[in-house]
Length: 334
Image 1 (cartoon, one colour):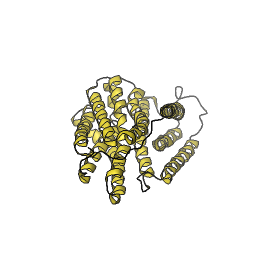
Image 2 (tube, rainbow, N blue to C red):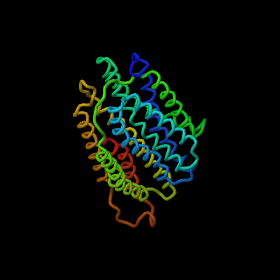
Image 3 (cartoon, rainbow, N blue to C red):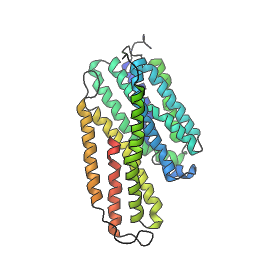
Image 4 (cartoon, helix red, strand yellow):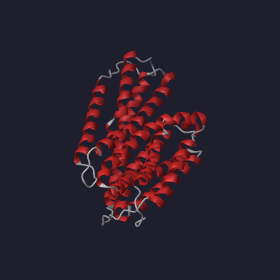
């Protein structure tokens, strides 16, 4: 609280644990999507929503809750966010149906606010010479945790079950919640003002309609059709499943890379410099160009559809190239 003496190592350990729990939840589920599709009795697209809903919730909640933390107190809000992350993880861990698990995933997405709140606490509480290094390590945790989640998901699914994909992060976030309340000092820095709810609503609408409506709808629809046209009928399931998995892995990696680029240079106050955003969008644009060039190499179909004939070997090879290209699409870095 406000009068506590800050233990920098302990504070960083607590914030790092919280950040790692969120990062693991982002990627642990990716390798499990085919199994969850079967276990939850849903379709491939339904299971993919377990990741999409999480990312959308995080994208919307992160800036809003970050602003609330600046106004009301970062320690108070990060405790509330960690509590929500714990509850959401518990709900998903107990879920045996897709709707219940989706609700849990949406609640977990609010955990994205851990990062701006943790950055603010580090900036306000840590000595100036420690701020840059601590924020850099916190940013690295997001990428490292996402990578670790993909690796750890296999042993968890083999030796335990899908429920433990949520039990483990839940335990971590519960510990971080209690530890944050007990050991993390409240920042005395406040930013008076109010939340622009109209702006927040417009931003949320843009994320939903922009990410889901235009870019993803056109790209995903065309990609699925390309794959179906290019592979034998008996390989449709595995090919489209790999398409979904690669896309989801790309989303996790892209968000980690973008975060690293944005925070690569910080101003004295601890906020990212403009060039970080410029660099992230530049890399996004370059990835878009590469994907577009790969798409141009796909031969046009001149014969009957896959329903009436076997695929041409060249078309199969080109489809594999484009499947790889979407793993680093612009929507992942934006």
